Image (tube, rainbow, N blue to C red; front, side):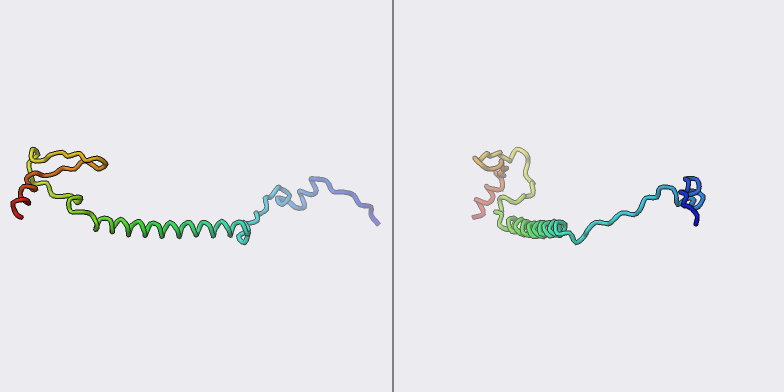
Length: 110
């Protein structure tokens, strides 16, 4: 029986060739059934659903608020001259332009 003699590095490279070089193996993919990951996905989905619902409610309220607006709050076409307007400041409200000619006209129509 022959005695075992270990092979040298050169013999190994001759036998296995390019396989002897370092080759990076594939990686394991993410564990998609992980409990923490599933919990994060569920929370993220709830947040998205809440955001969609909030957007829908806000859109509905904005449309409703415009329908409740008083006629004097809605923009009017400006057909009067610049000097017919008077700037009136009211506490806690924005400055509004009142058109004197329009007010006089409404007073005479009644």
